[in-house]
Image 1 (cartoon, rainbow, N blue to C red):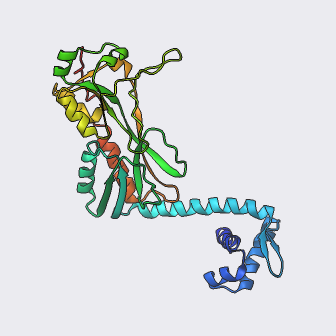
Image 2 (image 1 turned 90 degrees about the horizontal axis):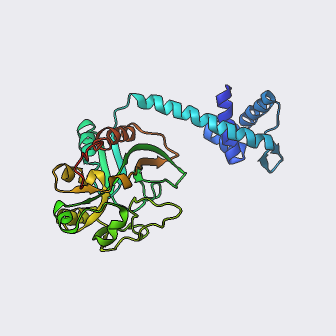
Amino acid sequence: MDNLGGMGVFVRVAERLGFSAVARELGLSPSAVGKAIARLEERLGVRLFHRSTRTLALTADGERFLERCLRILAEVEAAELEMSNASETPHGKLRVSLPKYSGLFQPAIASFMQRYPAVELDLDFSDHIVDVIGDGFDAAVRTGKLTDSSLKRRKIGALQRVLVGAPAYFETHGHPQQPADLLTHTCLHYRFPTNGRLEPWPLPTNDEEEAIELPRSFVCNSIEMRIHLTLNGQGIACLPDFSVAEYVQQGLLQTILEDCTQNAIPIWIVWPSSRDLSPKLRAFIDCLGETSLGINKGAMGHSSAR
């Protein structure tokens, strides 16, 4: 029996702690499985199992060898999957959770559907943090700092947050020249649906200066509503750059305090660590990175309030 075959038998026996069950799975006799383990122990020069008439248990050497075997066999399986997927056309159902505001992803989704018609997209747009595995998703798009180390991840872009208002609003209320000036303005805030907290605006603080307590003139959990109110001249909002880039270019909105709001929020796609990238998920990730998340670079132009 070759080395990999011997490792495979050893792993099965270690997981089931019995020769008979493994023998039935492999279509062998229990004695053949026992001899395979004995030959492996002889080749390694160590005892892998404690044996008695009633029990079978791994030795300390067996525990260490099992860890190595699991890693080796997982790498072999991943290599085989990668090779088999290399020429496979993406197809089948793909279920992905994405942030509620779909504007950033619309071009990528349209492009993906045109390029891969055999993939059935099932997309859930929500600001709630889903349980990728428990809720049955193939992947999820998330922003900011990731805390779940059990998921594989890939960075697919970044976004900036900008402070914007309508020209008519600034004509009436004046242009804030420094963060403290916002204390006299109408501020439109976003509340996170997951924890009920307000999204902090990306304003500078230092050890000697506490964060500015901005007026809570309006609070909601909708990007669309805050965009509508800013376009209507009813206040200043902190919004993702991609959501207002078109309005800034058209002169309908103006950015303020750019020197004070330098920030970058990473955008990730995550998927279960137990799964390798399937062709359909790999294609979807590529579309997100190529189509949606790079289109706003430099899109804000110079339409800022002075």
